[in-house]
Image (cartoon, rainbow, N blue to C red; front, side, top):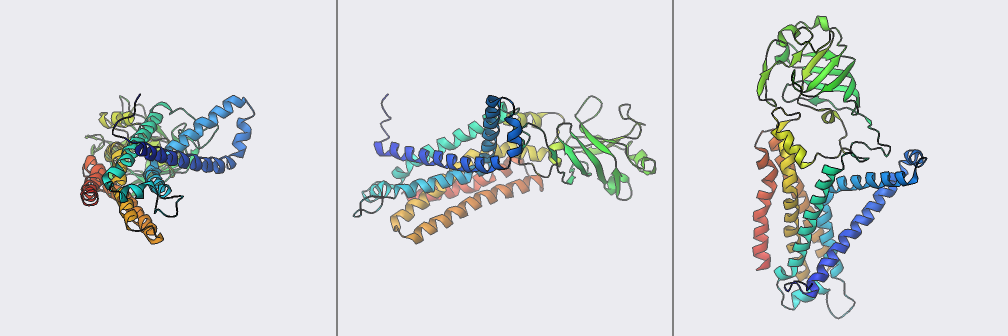
Length: 408
């Protein structure tokens, strides 16, 4: 098969160099991550290798593949930018002491336009970004039962998680407890803070011995069952609350927030069921070890009649995952013109420092705009699509200006 006529030998050389740097960074970073993490899991490894060695090796391969793919989800924008910068700096080297710079400088000084020089880097960079995003999404769909998908343990155990007090924006309740077990979706010592609008008077708190998650059924929406509620007979407001429907935004309907054995046959005496828009994973203090939901799962959850999680948050997560590859591609269109312009100026160290500062600023701008968009969605309630795509809408004109000013 003949190579595409548009690409010359030097174009293919640039692309191979970019892929080499990207692969090397993944290998080096992955090796260091693997080395330090294995040392922290000596006890688990000794138990794992007591059985079949083949099974142990396969388990480790699955566990660390998922961990690396999940890590790339959060650092890929910085990884792509670093790969681009290192590739250009490597191409700057030249064995000849008489000629300044490497292949890129020679092409620029010999009359090639910056647009023509940058084109192979744009193409291979964008293809690499979309490939990595597609690979990550495939892992999130087909590898949810792998070791490491919902646990930080090689043995496949679901850890007891530390809980963080969470405010249910739909009901106004504050939910807290200890020893969150994600295998049984339960936690101990639940403390439920009740606002004045739910008690029809003053702030109150429900204390119980245990709480467990109940998914949506024909009898009730999703929520938590509180077992062994303390001083239940002293909660005078509860009799009115169980008969007072309130507007629940996440269900788009009016229902009582509380259910007791007096109004619901499926609630045992001494227990209370509370409707919640929070799921057990939302109550954990450290969510970094969970495999993100796949795009099909997010889409199904958003379009279900009764959602299990906050509507705005889930919609934003869906749109932010869709916009992520395009947003990372904008970094290429922002960083490559800066690097090429500096290379035309001088090879001195101060220009390299300037490149580093500018690229770091651009990455910070990218992250900052994404964070602002998320806050606008969750706190101010703007449409999730606007919040997620806001950084791209802002950066696209900047890319167009740089393209016009630096390539023409």
